[in-house]
Length: 104
View 1 (cartoon, rainbow, N blue to C red):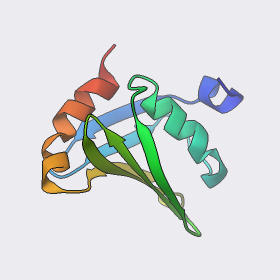
View 2: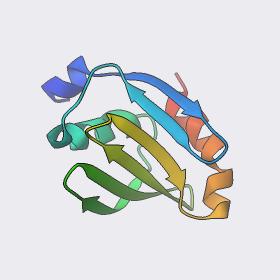
View 3: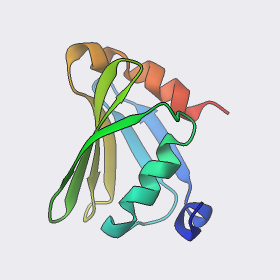
């Protein structure tokens, strides 16, 4: 575990009808996104990262989990992070993904 993930934690993960809203305890920088992904997906190690799209202030991470496809979005300037399904089947599985990430 890196120093960032030791200091950082997931503040909340809330289910919305079409996405999961992710809030981290502390502010983060774009160069910390790999560590944030590790922290977020730690409870569900069967996640497979398919693609990373890196922009000036935004990163999109396409991943699969349990035969569904999702996009994890980070916007640095607004400190926004959310997960959305890539198709209607995956969007319906957001509640299951939410439960898997938040299980203790």
